[in-house]
Image 1 (cartoon, rainbow, N blue to C red):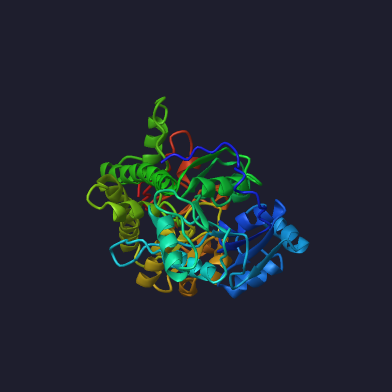
Image 2 (cartoon, rainbow, N blue to C red; image 1 turned 90 degrees about the vertical axis):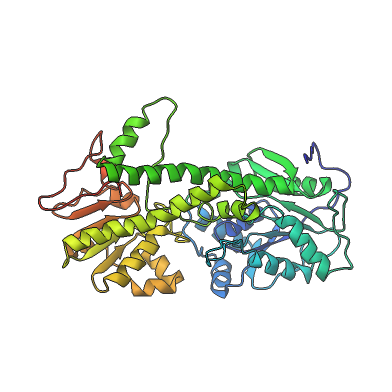
Length: 448
């Protein structure tokens, strides 16, 4: 269903002055700041009291360029404040996590979204707008309508045929990348899916207060599918690079040289391999497609299996190196799911480091520019030994490059060490063909 909207209709004559943003994470907090900057009164809601306290002090709980200054200005102006319980508002935005079950089924877990809609149910009134931003399985927006209907039978909900209700609902997925969120949340195109024409109109008018990218209006199910399709597409391309690295390792070929040469073809652009796929989007969202259509989502399932296999392959390669050097200490460089960010969600590098540390306790150290953030957030990180780069190289004979942080790439290639270059930290700096000669008596894997 296409909802073609040109202008906001007279039906939407009231001004949204106050809004609640539920979930103050990597998407919710920047979104709250942008709406506050646009002049709205914004209340951020989060169950974590530490996050709420930090936001109210104007302190960012995440590392994101440009966000600290923006939050400080918005909290200082009084246009943005944080609380632990949802308040009455004109509009509600839901930006909470949507993980999957870690029981082998990979079934979507929408319990956080359901909790958010239950909190809204206590304060929602006729004329309110509810927008879901959390990446969700197709049909989730309709699901929360039914949840609200069961709690608030006094309110008329929009119909599945597009008829209007007392409350308007829309779905609009974020399209930002950590490290560039404050820029991309403004300039990137936005897809807005309404359950009815009026819902789409109202959400469109609200986003246009700060979005300079083009806004594309459609229905809610299409918007939900767009987000999943985008991340599954990226997953496919990463899986090819990761499987290619394993094949190169089998055939004794330097994968970095191979990719550099293959990409000289005018219609080829192979991505860089790594230890797997992490983050809360690409490693999670494709499973929502598999869960929704397990009988036909065959490619998506295989791609997920390829990328989920890579951390196990890397672990085995490290095991081989440690068997050759049974008394060596081991350093893992990088723990976040991608370079130069403080996001460790679903990070394969972190899982590899934890598993190695359990195998060789007392002989494994880790290095990450944002290690202090990880220690604050993850109880499991307490088992790890954190060192700076120099101290780690001085102590350890086996070095595993898991994440190509800029601070690692700017260093000289370590000498006299066994290097397992999983993410191309040193290979890409070694020359046109990315070939590194291992030190005497050591073995270098650049393809793992």
